[in-house]
Length: 337
Ligand code: SF4
Image (cartoon, rainbow, N blue to C red; front, side, top):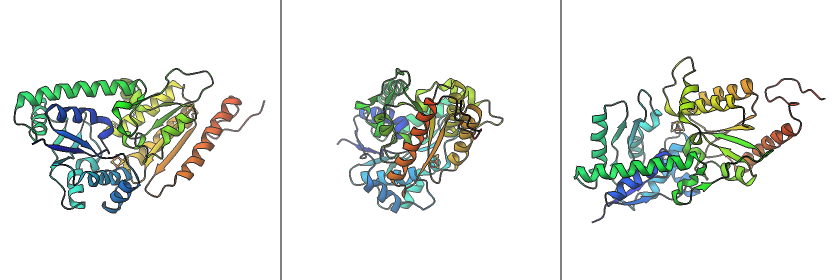
């Protein structure tokens, strides 16, 4: 009988889903992905999570519930670290326990630990453990992993060149134009992939920008070496992978100065964001005079309020471009010529 594996469309999903989907499909499993986030998923997640959790974790709980009665296993790995000497957020580390304790009667989890701080031998063992839910044949498992890795590299390359995986639709990833037309606005959206690419959770932010004919840049399109180079300039090593990526991106963009504005999309209740959004703002506004908008979303955020702030921000940038150099984004006096 075919094993059915459910993958929740939340958290690490937007970074890694081609890897895990290809892996399990190559092994012969049927992979079922939860529906794109909607009101029901958000409400269910909010009702079944502890109040202190951040919005993406609440949404993740909703996605698990969406899969509950449809699959044999739910894929909820314990993600400790995806880069050496770095860590993911503590909420990722305890995610399987948190979900299991919040929602009763769930199917078994595939909750193997992912920890790149362990040896390469440990990594091989981890891959085998993931595959063993479908087959005990190591040759099949490592062959499937090689194919999955290739699918993952292809996906990353696509996103790098402007294919935005909104709601994670890999077969119809949106390709936005990458040639900048003179006078056209170019806005960077900084945020965790699960905030930025989730249409419902982000209040459709990326689509709204693209409808306004804005060229959108996300951290996944930037050169990771450059991001790391700038992050390394910090006086103390940023060992949270998400924080390092977002702050390094803000610093890199501030240095390039070819961006018209930065929007930081943050989740209420995220400890890492509360530090990074402030440091990014200082780099963008104070050091590089780049207009900066912080949008913090929680389960009560109304779309109308986000629209108003977004429109005002875009109008301000338009105005600033028309009256070049007359308006400072960081509080200096306005000077009329
Ligand atoms: S990094 Fe922030 S938004 Fe992401 S899971 Fe952790 S607390 Fe939540």
